[in-house]
Length: 148
Ligand code: DQA
Image (cartoon, rainbow, N blue to C red; front, side, top):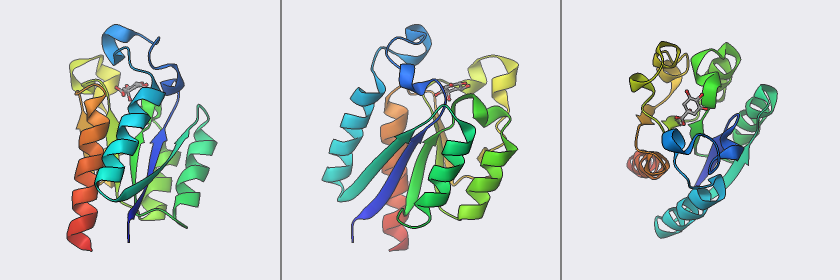
C-alpha cells in the first residue's frame, strides 16, 4: 500500500515567496507542495497538506493524522523553538515526524538554535531551502519502506 504522508506547515509559511526571500527563497508554498506531490507520486506515496498559523490547529492535524497517515513532514516555524504542546502532540501520536526547516536555524539567531521538538522527531532536515522538504520526504519514504 502507498505510504500516506501529511505535509504540515506552521505559522507564516503561507507567506513563502514574499516573506524574507533572502532567508526563505522566492518559491511559494504552493510551488513547494507541487514538487512534493510529483516526488510522492514517483515514489508511490500519497500526500495531504495542512498549513495553519494556529498552534491548536496544528495539534488537531497531528491528532487527525493518527487515523490515516504513516508519517509527517513538519515545518513548525517558530513553534519549533518553544511549543511544548506540539512536542507532546508529536509524542502522543507515535508517528514518525521529520522536522523540516528551509533555513539553517543553527546559523541564525540564538533563539533558533533550540528545538523543543527534535528529541521526539525521527530526524531533522534544515538549511537546504525548498529542497529541505524534498530531502525530508525522501528520508521519510525510505524509513517507511524499510519498515514495510
Ligand atoms: C523555519 C525556521 C524558524 O526559526 C522560523 O521561525 C520559521 C521558518 C524555517 O523553515 O527555516 O518560521 O522553520
